[in-house]
Amino acid sequence: MIRAVKGFRDVLPEEAPLWRRVEETARDLFEAYGYSELRIPVLEKTELFERSLGITSDIVEKEMYTFKDKGGESVTLRPEATASMARAYIEHALYHSDPVGKYYYFGPMFRHERPQAGRLRQFHQLDVEAFGYMSPSLDAEVIALLSTLYRRLHLSQLTTLEINSLGCKECRPVFRDCLLQFLEKVRGGLCPDCQSRIERNPLRVLDCKREGCRRVMEEAPVISQYLCPSCQEYQEEVLLLLEDLGIPYSLNPRLVRGLDYYTRTVFELVTPHLGAQNAVAAGGRYDDLLQQIGGRDIPGIGFAVGMERTILLLEKGGEVPRSLDCYLAVLGPSALKVGMKLAQGLRERGIRLEITHEEKSLKAQLRRASKLKVPIVLILGEEELKKGGIIVRNMDEGTQTWCPLEEDRLIAHVKREGRP
Ligand code: ATP
Ligand code: MG
Image (cartoon, rainbow, N blue to C red):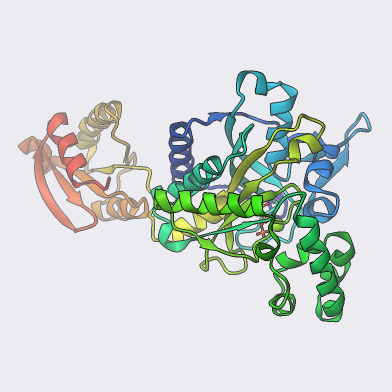
């Protein structure tokens, strides 16, 4: 028996409706905010990620699927989308036609990490990027978009939006120096990873998830106290705009991101419901990224939503995956014949329905229907046929009503009794 590769998983048909719901909700919303789809390839030159994420990031150091192709070129399965989106924006000189380029993308990403709940080696992200503009109102709009997506998915109650500023080229080095001094003092109390981060990338220590490091870092200097006046003003404006828009957030002065390219605004959507995997979506502003990968000096901001974690949250939130509107139970050969015609007619009019093709008892068919989690079962037996009607059973309430065998009336029934 050949099994799937570790950390790579199938999305089974029973889960697929939830995936589609998230994707469809996101697509509608992103388009409503003026974003268009930009489809990027799965494979990129390794250099793209080294230059954008930084060679000391965890992703580049430990997690990339990098290999030499048959021509000897080093290529990498993309671990995230921002770098590719930026590459595509520059490569096709989209800034000529779209001075503010707003794009979105859905697809799989690849990171060689230790698989566990909410952490896979092939996982999926919804990605949103806005290139070309640096303005607090754009930051607020992008954050509002993420927040609205979660509200539409009814997940606001399970998540908190955290915001911070990482400063700019002017103020971050000052903070970095103070942080370095602090880290030298507490070096012995940090994990080996963090000890080596001190030289290579001290900001990353603030992001360590280990309990011991977290405790030590409670005393560390916080970046908000080191922001230059223009970064400070910028952040205040973003926050004011969010308040105007009624977007709830919480300031987290300790929030940093694991990648090198972020500047100023950073944010994460976090949840206490997924154990150690507490971030479901994350993003921020990256004003130097496009230049770093060899493009022009164009600013940008974006975020990525983790699909698997979002789906896990939907399941926690009690959302029932459902793809069918009803199940048609038929009893006896003549009912099956009439039922087939009825099923065909209802399906053509947009009702999603399953009908049995075996001779099965009503009990067995109802069992199948509850397994499918359909809200309604239509029951057609010889008796009903004779009377020219059908039984409509509401599975949530366990009630039954009688309906004449007419498509229009049945559809009205199914719509009225079904779940939205
Ligand atoms: P984490 O701290 O959990 O490792 P990250 O900072 O590496 O997350 P990002 O690079 O910001 O994650 O990616 C954005 C989102 O993508 C995360 O918030 C998460 O929901 C999702 N994600 C990242 N890595 C994985 C993974 N290995 N498996 C599943 N989802 C992931
Ligand atoms: Mg990670």
